[in-house]
Length: 315
Image (cartoon, rainbow, N blue to C red):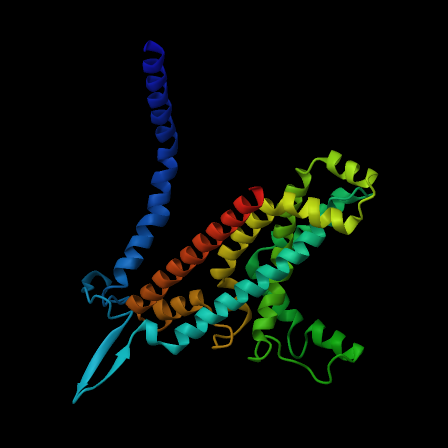
């Protein structure tokens, strides 16, 4: 009885100590994340503007969806959920996230497999691979903007010399190539991040497994499919989740590299335009709220699906 009482007392003391250690972090998170998020959600249900933010009035779901009756049984729906530009930005964001994360995962896996091998100068190569990721995003975007310039860019000059194109291409200005340009820059910059996380997973795989597989004469491709890939899958999934979160919030590369057009406008760019450029603060807050809900829904769904898949494989 006394042992049980001591254990329960010790558990309470540990729980109290844990909350005391966590409280500074929770306070900081509330100040920098929870409170601004709550204010954004609240503004989305008002008629707030930049000039009259303190006098904002509650309007309900008008910014999201509103039916206006013109009389004689005629009416029309208005709001963010009926805005074609919003849905185009949703499509651009999701398409960008799927394509960029897919390429970055494949390239990151290849680079990680190479860097996991023993060869002369491996440490130097590992450091060099991280350079694109270490460069600030704004600097990367401006650098690639000059490289893709239709008159002075090195890409057009190189492709013309190789005969791959017959005339100069405005990579970032043309609606047909603007999103491709954004994808190129993002994949070039973020693939090292994926490679770093996957490499960490590869470093945790015991070398004895590979030695036993080689002694049994198992081909390298089968070793990768049956041993390497299943063992590093948790690290790959973590990397994919992190990158998916960043990709769904993409803003800086699009804002710096391309003009604000329907071809490249993402949800973050759409929200920023309405918040500040068009002085539709409440409308932009509604877009920001839906962006947060979209990211949360996709992330939770992805985590649940991958967790069920991993549990099924373990069973």
